[in-house]
Amino acid sequence: MEAHAARHLGPISERTRSERRLAWLLCAPAVIAMLAVTAYPIAYAIVLSLQQIDLRFPEEGGFVGLDNYASVLSSDLWWTDLFNTAFLTVTTVAIELVLGMAIALVMHRAIFGRGVVRTAVLIPYGIITVVAAFSWQFAFSPDTGFVNNLPLIADDMDWFGGRFSSFAVIIMAEVWKTTPFMALLLLAGLVTIDRQLYEAAKVDGATAVQRFFRITLPLMKPAILVALLFRTLDAFRVFDTIFIMTAGAQDTESVSILGFNQLISRLNLGLGSAVSVLIFLCVLIIAFLYVRVLGTRVEEGRPVK
Amino acid sequence: MERGGREYTLWSIGILVVLIFALIPVLWLASLSLKPTDAVADGRFIPSEISFENYESLFEGGIDDSPFIKPLINSILIALTTTVISIVLASFAAYAIARLEFPGKRVILAGALAIAMFPPISTVGPLFDMWRTLGLYDTYPGLIIPYLTFSLPLAIYALVAFFREIPWELEQAAQVDGATPFQAFRKVIVPLAAPGMFTAAILVFIFAWNDFLFAISLTSSDASRTVPAALAFFTGESSFTEPTGSIAAAAVVVTVPIIIFVLFFQRRIVAGLTAGAVKG
Image (cartoon, rainbow over all chains, first blue to last red; front, side, top):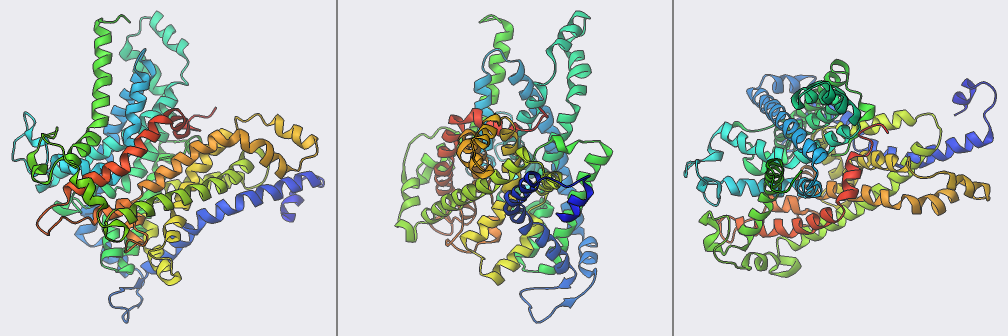
């Protein structure tokens, strides 16, 4: 505090000083609570990842340098799971963007039924992901489900028997659960566009499609990028839906499931922590790409999910 | 737009499709939960016969033997505790950020944003190890602490957005009348801020209520296992029967109250979810 005060021209007033003291006091508990379970554990994860620690064989162990990383990065499983995670992330976020934009436009333009649509989109938001995953799993299961009784779908279609048919159901469940959030974020961006721009474009003879691509999309670019950043990072940690639906069978494992299996099921803290740190690095790279390469202005965004 | 016109029909169909798609998983679970055991596999969307046996079996045996009652209590207590603590801490921080001038404000906001992007799986291993050493494994605090960490950023962001819209002249008036900054905060601002805090509380509660990863990683028994984790461990009547009916019934019990709540407060939730999404 002294050091900071010295940078100001002249002495700072007692009032300013007490205001700062109060501010720091008010922020301290939240900051400590946020750091307690992120900064320290990630540092601890790095330490663990450099050791051989298997809780089933506690007598073995010790510092092994980057061996755990070498094991993970040279295993096919990591690369399969990374592909699965990237594939699921890209497809779900892309579908969500299109659907979310459609719903946002409906909510924005609708002369009636806006309340009904808002009600409808909040239902998936309120439902536990695990519960939704069970519902879709039961619906698509050949034993209990109704989906195979629908027209155009083979009665004996074994959705969870193949990799990409499993992905189709997983993607559907994820899209169902998270499109509402995307739609609401996009709607918030949509309402800030000046209506006069559309009127002027109409006068100039622009069609609805032209107005969407020439006015709506460019002006919404910041809002879209922020929504995409948050949804991409959120989709990248996909865990609940896969765990319930396939538990990783048929090569549908995500990197989060791999980390969980190593850490909690196999109690191999060394290898599992290496996976955790690698996932953390992936998230950093994604955030970096969005912020530096695409120019996403995150300070205008928000972390609600 | 005229009633009966082509455009009106198209809008109606669009709205209907959204509504049906949103509702299908809920209706399907309700349908499954009401089917008698021998009809669970009939594949019908609408049950031909209604039975409440799945609900009865869920609560059978009381708190000691029911696979559901204890996790339900755990879920409610853990989510409520998380919500109260998170909102208190976030309100302090959000007040300081929205109202006071101090160095470090931007760092706190940026840090909160970074934590919102943080992958929870990266903390599961260290927490598992630390909690076993500290005796927090399979306890309420063992779950409440990580929930606090990951709910604080969303609570802080929502509250800062709400607090910025409060008429702060009232606070100055109180201070002119001799109140200290803390009194001005507690007596004048808290009542004005209550609606925003309530909204943030809903978001935090839903977050804690929804978590699965920490719940299965940091618990090992009904002592602290929450409903999402307990559902994954449900077993059938015998090892040859699937627990489909009981899972569906349990899912309905934990879903219907939340849906009613969400629909009742939908305007507030939308405001909270999109607070700060656009600089205003």
